[in-house]
Structures are given as structure tokens and as C-alpha cells.
Image 1 (cartoon, rainbow, N blue to C red):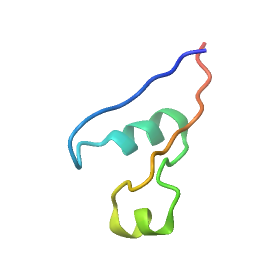
Image 2: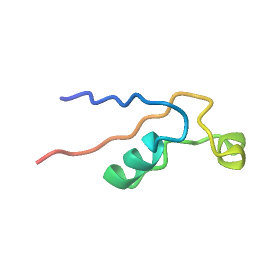
Image 3: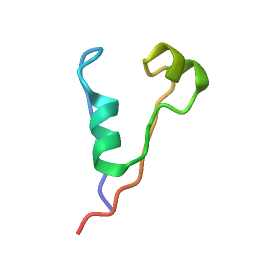
Image 4: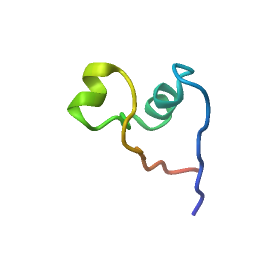
Length: 49
């Protein structure tokens, strides 16, 4: 099992990268989606070849 993390400044595309790689949007709360920023830590699973 691998654990991959992201780090970066606001609006640098961390959540967009996770969504592009996994198809899962890590922003799960309604307020996060409305405001366009992550409030709670998100995660997504991805199977590596």
C-alpha cells in the first residue's frame, strides 16, 4: 500500500489533481463546494498498476 499526499498554497490545484487522478472529488462538505475551498481533510483511493 502506498500513501501519497499533496501540499501547496491556496488555489494551486491540489483538489483538482486528486480528482483528475482518481475521479473522486475530495471536497465532500456542501460548504466546501459552495466556497470552492477545502475545510476538512479529504482523501481518495487509487489503484496503481
